[in-house]
Length: 125
Image (cartoon, rainbow, N blue to C red):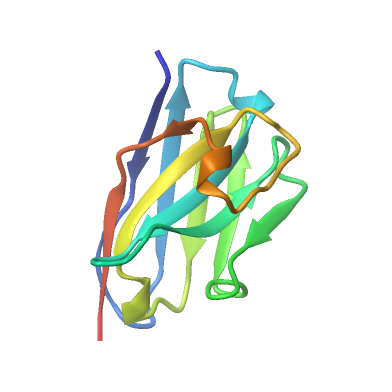
């Protein structure tokens, strides 16, 4: 069965860094695009970043560009989100998702087929 399990969340101060990881199983990881989304309290989920199957093409939301970096290790079946210069407005539950179209780096939730349960990131001011 398909599983996506996020880890690495926590409570940090503004300006700190965190690295999230999402471990995949139950499908061919190297054949899918991967993304991170987040949902802040009281807000709709929003796109954060995506990487195509080989990591050679990426996409970022304007709000995180230059601060966050997505990467993936297909041998480890894991996608990462390095988050630097964190701000209180980055506080959210972060989810990873898989898109069976491997060359796409979509920002649309509806394009993603599999989802993890999320990991909480809280940034204090």
